[in-house]
Length: 430
Image (cartoon, rainbow, N blue to C red; front, side, top):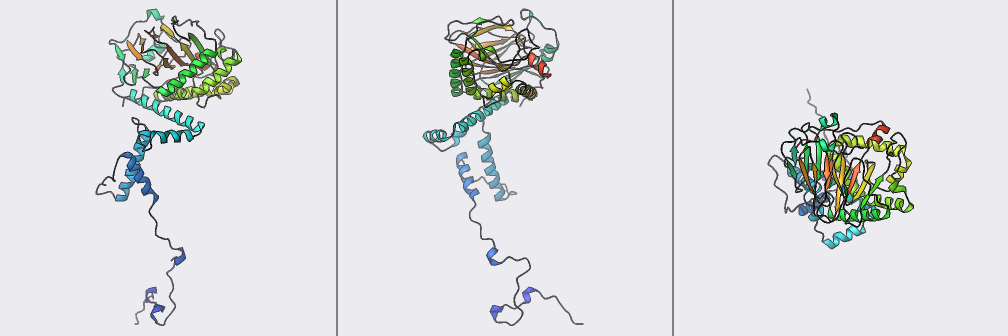
């Protein structure tokens, strides 16, 4: 029997060798020379990696473990450097740059106004998240032994003069770091963020608030639930309300409207729109703080905001002056005002009130009698409180001028919208 085998292309003689046979054919699927891939040049990723390593202070790639290929090690090193640059909460990103101060200033000047504002708002939100996380740490958390926020909501209302301390031991927030007070039923009652509004933003906000206070007619009248007063030694004395939609006292079933301080004159309306435009950074901090501390109430407030924007065109027009959404329908600027112990009776149960302090005073104190808590406050501080359910007071101060920007929501607006102000549990201690 004759043995046969399939002829392979290797058996075909090479024409260049002078052998006679069939013409040589290329293997099936092979690409012609003109379409073959050329050798790759040095990838740009190496240049990017080198720049990142230089910024992060490394001079060479870290040695990879023996079970990891060099390519994977390089990739992880680049990812770690990028992650460290993006998530660093202690050091500003500008400090990692090798650009001089003049070069950074020139780059900033070349950016459009919209780009600069967006960068400021983004940075402010990042700072608010960092402050909220710092307050959630073990060092920043104080837990009540007795006081329950749920019991305060469900229990009978007591006049301020009859409210007694509940906690056994006093607590002081000295203003050295962000802190929070968590009640025995795992609800956050107070959050203090020292220096939450950074100096440059605070300075711009204070100038805008002064301009607005001069443009409107400030009122020195006091609400029924607040028997405080005013320190007459300052340039501006009184309060101005910037409310996009609220109900007149005694008329909760009528349609809501813009506060009179805003619409009283053409000058006050123009000044309000300018003020709202300059409040973007402060608004971003307040809203991001609320979102980080109580995401459940943040979502409920967003529903109320959507209702207000769809229901009232005047509120929609005022909100269009700002590039950052503000879910609180009410803001009040109080110039040189102090308060005695009181509840915020117009707010709904569980509601947050967020207060920003500014002025020239060195420090002041806010006290919470039920919690036996005292908070030391300075210009630029932000404090979030449950004003309707926790008794609080901000007494007189020694020298300088003290002003506050209060963010609040009223129960009548929630009833009109058919919504409920709800809250979530305290975030776990980290």
